[in-house]
Image (cartoon, rainbow, N blue to C red; front, side, top):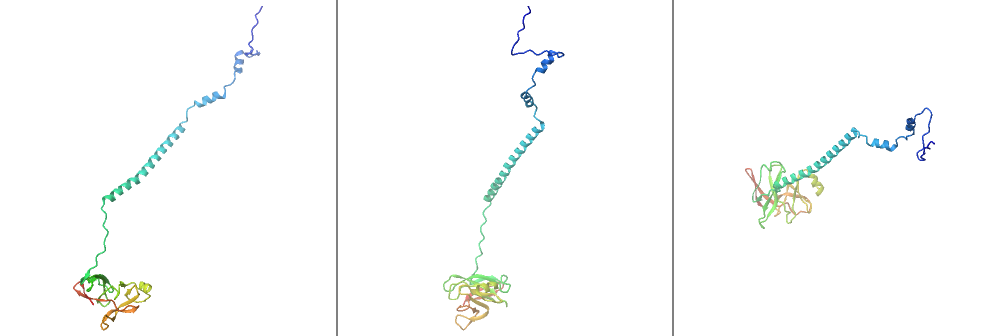
Length: 237
């Protein structure tokens, strides 16, 4: 008897097709490669060269930016430190003080300083009674005379001012003139040095007649002498 061939239920036999060999049937029966296998192949593919070059370039630019930012932050600090050190090394300049006015009796100016009409120079004159120096001024008048007088208000304490700014004279004193005047800022009295007024005794005439205000008399005169190039304040009236 011919032995019966056992059939595996989990491995069914391939059907026999006329004209097709068993190897061809086996090849057709094998399933195609899965998508997972194709993905594995793609993952193992080499990285493109242009992508590597772009990454390297970006890294170089980043490093350059970091270096530039650090160097720019350091330079001002170094400059500041250098300037501070230089400032400490240099000695501080002493403030310039105003020249001390000359004190009369004695030389108080030169003819060169008072060469122009209405030029003036302040000085100090020692009071004959108190011995204290008081502010005074000498003025070159248009005809060439030198006239000196105390800047202390007669029989008062307010300091007079020699006004060459005619606009200031009009604004502050309400007085219009065509040449400089002497003014008392306390009571707005105006004195004219081109005209004479009564002096201390009432009989003598003194330059600086009152043309406006409630002043008592012209400013206290100081005798002025010109000796060579020196202008000397001699005595007060």
